Length: 307
Image (cartoon, rainbow, N blue to C red; front, side):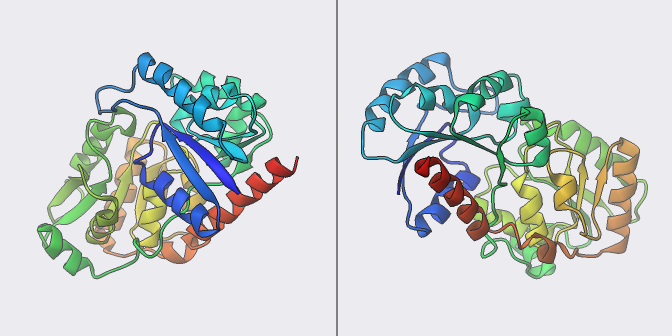
């Protein structure tokens, strides 16, 4: 099977791992990415997307079985090519963000749609497949916390709370995380440091997750945040707001907590920092692996091509 992938996020680790897992199943994948650059302050321009369409049209005339539009803003261009069936994957912000209307308009015209969580399925309001991104359990695995702290040069006598994004990513709501950690400092005896991840290679995030005492997620919106699944694979406790599929992913994971208010976040984080545990997350998360994800997507491809 030959698949033409369209994406605006070709350097996204979840997308790269998805392609790798599909190719390991014998699927030939070609990727065409929207031109232009994305920064924390700005996205691609309208002109970038105008330049994208001729490339998609030309490439679609090749010997492909289908087009897979990865991320909602690529869907119009997948649908505008004249001959191939279209599979659309929605990741989260492309459904509930300010341009979510593009995804909602395009999804009914696609031959199949994949979303990351049951919440996204309800928001989309149509029949679709729930297939969250998988986790590479060979990269994200438990290791000695003291060794990880040594590698990063963190204070071994302090508590470390991991906010796994850049501060500038507004949707991730760093100010709320900082506010929670500042409050928690009054609840625990040891120092508490809020650690962020800026320009950290994806594979190195495993070291951060093994060094930290807790992952704190305060995002305004999410689909199926991979950082939560990666934390579980490292047995790192998670304290999170109730977004995306986090509640489902944390079911049966202890210690971890899904919270709604700042007070709940503060209490849950303080409890974890004062008990110094690791979680049982890996045993709960192993079903969301790369092979499972690729097999489910492959099933969607076969169904679309056969019809």
